[in-house]
Length: 78
Image (cartoon, rainbow, N blue to C red; front, side, top):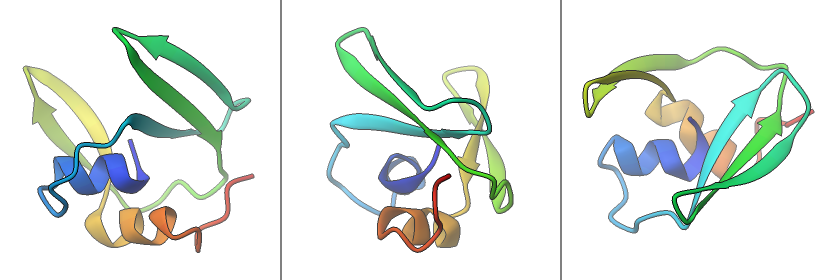
């Protein structure tokens, strides 16, 4: 999970993101899960991730620094 979704889960922004942004090395796609749009973006930059226990599940999040860069588009996708 990256970009502003990660910033929210790290507690660095108070706005709840409308979409969940995930980065993948596969083809980009979108889906709706429980009324929330999940956007998969393609990237070759898999660094700067940490894990978090969220509702009993281990999830991978961009570090706050990398999430900021992803949010403003400095880390290219694709």
